[in-house]
Length: 153
Image (tube, rainbow, N blue to C red; front, side):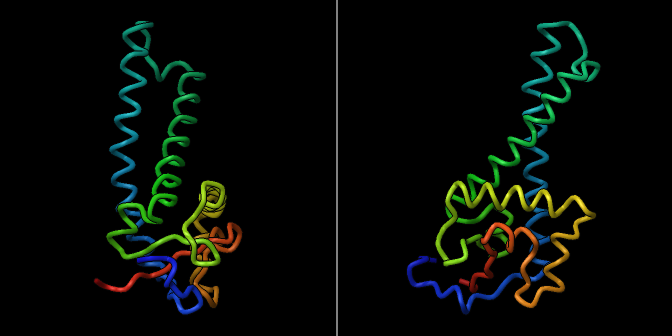
């Protein structure tokens, strides 16, 4: 889809089920990536120090921070390079800014931060798309981005 001939005003927003489907697909991929990252950090730590990585509170918190950064990099990269993660591609969803243009680094970062905030109160930020007349979740509204449903090809 070329964004130059895309009419954002007539774009359909994906349903909650489509969003959840894409989240599920991406979660499977991210679990694998995070397992590799954990192995790349924990195994050398054990070999170098002779200790158990998970007994060191500072080390485990640094690993958690690294995991958040990996997840952020995953989404920001895919949103800024084609507007779709692999899960979004499977479910025919694309992330665009409010004008129908591809996301920039800053708009993708804003979207990721607001998505994390929206998931904190029991996923209420995502569930909000059930009540919004445009089917926007909190992170769609607050980041001034949106998801659009792509036509079958």
